[in-house]
Length: 482
Length: 100
Image 1: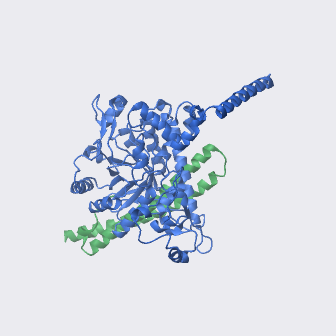
Image 2 (image 1 turned 45 degrees about the vertical axis):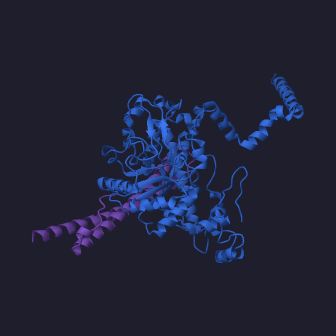
Image 3 (image 1 turned 120 degrees about the horizontal axis):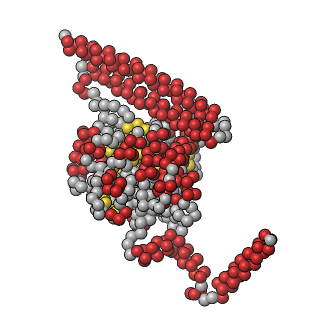
């Protein structure tokens, strides 16, 4: 019987495929379904669908989780293991993983691992269950979680042993009764996936619990403005930082979207004497943002880190101001490379929520996206088992840190914070020139000679545009060599 | 005279806190090592619940390592306060109140 059904199915498939192929061969190209293949290749599948969505909605389409483009060429950097020249760390030596954020603050924030949970707001982005699972997991591993641009959710504050709150452009965390209950304050002026653009959550997507946390009236939209209220001049920002530091004693930092104006922005942060700076690279995620803001605005995380580290070193504040990197960091290797390049710690967002959903994805697949378990407006948020989700994230974080520890061992280091640029080599001459990482093609003592011998390829006096590194793109672009 | 006595008491208290922090730092280090050994032993068993306990032990080991770091930082701070007192320079010490 089974054989009969199998033969029947085979003959139907055979007939259908034959007809489809014949039709594609014989039909005029302009009327041919095969036309979709070159069109999709030309436009890109994502672009094609988003084009159709724009045509349908007439509004920017709120793409979740950030840009699919990989701007930072992390794969072009490798760690340098040691064997005899320097010995690897014996396996019975514990690798130190703790980091102190804002060492000069009256109440510095010490976390047990250099990975924190990024700002993802309750309501604006995630469901209450997701936020609680993130807080539980963060507490279990001894790290901090972040409020995102939201008000103070009591349950989250209770679950999180270390809680960083965003003093935000919506104004929902900006009163002393709220910010005095935080373990660190992050003044949020922008994010990688949105720049400093405004955002609005319409009242139809705002439930009672959301209104309670944000202090909104029924029917009122939640609005994130492009500027922080009361900060229209740099002096006002400086005053705000000093006021928050005086009133709370906890580390007070600045979060911005990484930008080519980085040094000018950081100069003001230095003048304000912030305790930490969070740089969110162009790869940063979001609950839903305009694709153009995600794909075409900002600076890649890697270059934000290297430039900020160089600037802080030059300004002699590298020990005073902690640097937190975020935006598209998914693998432990990428996270440790960010630390090696100068970040004191990293935030993870997308990776953390994917870890929450991991084993519970089956509850929504194949008919709904796993994010419907996690986002505030998701259809399946009540199906998320908070305890299990938190356990999955704890396991993920442990695995990530363990992998980072293994790399530290092979580098002969005893602390993750000791991993530095000298533990890296790069396969890209432009990266070597721009970041100071040695080029893996030639020996350490031949670096200068290599660049001198190939000076024609890497001229000293060129137009800035020509020096710009063009990261590897999936479609066509290649690094320019002039 | 009373002021001198107060300063002497304060110095004694700081010395006490300093030595206790050093003790706590040593204990945290020892316990961290023990927790880490438990992690390695528990990962020998291919059993989900035991793996979860192993992960908890690993996290505990790291957090004890953090406590060690925090104790060291606080001990340094107290040492600075003691030195400032000895130099009659208490006013100039940094105003850090506590660590998390």
